[in-house]
Picture 1 (cartoon, rainbow, N blue to C red):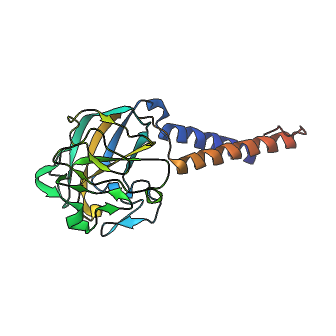
Picture 2 (cartoon, rainbow, N blue to C red; picture 1 turned 90 degrees about the vertical axis):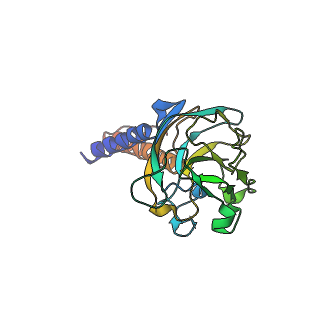
Picture 3 (cartoon, helix red, strand yellow; picture 1 turned 135 degrees about the vertical axis):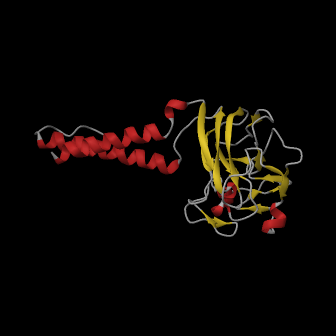
Length: 240
């Protein structure tokens, strides 16, 4: 009975992970990006902090999926809104054009965790960050972008403007493997409210490394349970 339970549990864990990874949504991912999603925590491990009160994973941005350099992404179906000051969300995905944020002015630095900041960014707007497969602190920082003239070709580790998605298709930079989504604020994303819903077209929905580790654990556990079952039945252990 215990072996059967182990088998069922391992199988359920694998099935649940496959479902949560969005494997069935290859090519697109529909996501909800909370106002608390801080782009400067992209790719950073649990316990990392920044921006006066924010830390991973509490204020981590949303992992949108896997990407490849040279591909193009579009952002559709945007709805919802965010408030940087708490309470009822006040600003849609394009953000508040009457309140522009500069990370150098708010944070005193132009890059955070080697992720480039921004100037003239509408507060509460939807933004993205492209990363390689390694932590951003292991790579050179990107250059600061001025959101007065949003770019369709952002570089690695640059916070770039998405807004309401009408800017056009974004070209994935060379070396990028991951896309993260967040919102604009000057500091303290932790007290933001609301969320922005968006469909990202062109990504492949796969688990982050931690999720792959869980999947591997489930597979190993399933194999061990099968070997134990065969042993108790007097059969030779199956090769791994």
